Length: 344
Image 1 (cartoon, rainbow, N blue to C red):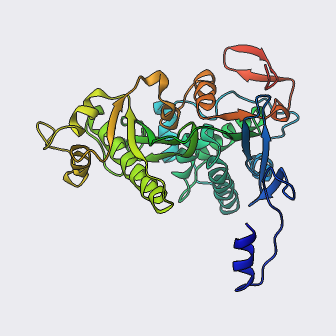
Image 2 (image 1 turned 60 degrees about the vertical axis):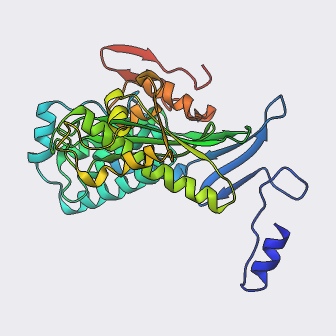
């Protein structure tokens, strides 16, 4: 760090705000790009890094949506599976007036920033982003639903615990076939891991309309492999050589990627067949995992609160103690549940 400071100082005007580290002269907590980064160690001496997203985005989203954290009931999921009627409303409900539409776009972009560290919001933000060009009343209701979830869980953090250097990059992918009831496109969920550390988690609509489940799952494999090769190349530039493992819960997509040619899948876009070459060249390994152990599952569709919690734990996304409920109770459809502290 001293050498880096000397080099930069010889060419630019600069200042050093802080140094994060465990040695003398370093701080254990700092704000970096409005994210709170903290260092620590557990009872066994194993070190950890905790990254907490910018809290202001949560506060401003609640304010924009008109949700009062002190009086509004929270919900345990950021979205629900849309019905046919709700899908119809997304297309034909009244458009928002210009000022409210601007507020909607601002809130969705704030949620998009949050979703970079908050995997629990990724799929919901993807759906909200579909209304950016012409937001309607139904989109506003979706935003308010997410805001009520932020009342229940306003603050989480990514935790990176000290680990042994892994020998491969692991990418988990999943697909929700024709999950978009408006455009009938499938959704690809992806989570990149380096050992137990989450590097990236995304939820995206597929550009091609898959004609069956196998095809949409194959496109998810292509997406994950492309990003995995990119991360692998980046690590190689740093002098770190890793293998690449792609994990999917689809046996048919794995089988299609492991052979050469279209076979009976004549409708698959030929520009995506490069994955077969990558697998044949052993540049990537495709591994079958169970759906229950696939964390990218929550990136593809609306999931239950228990499922979200399970996969958040697998991705080392923790609910901070001060981020327990902001009200005395939360609303769970069909039941009444007391709010439990995050440590429960």
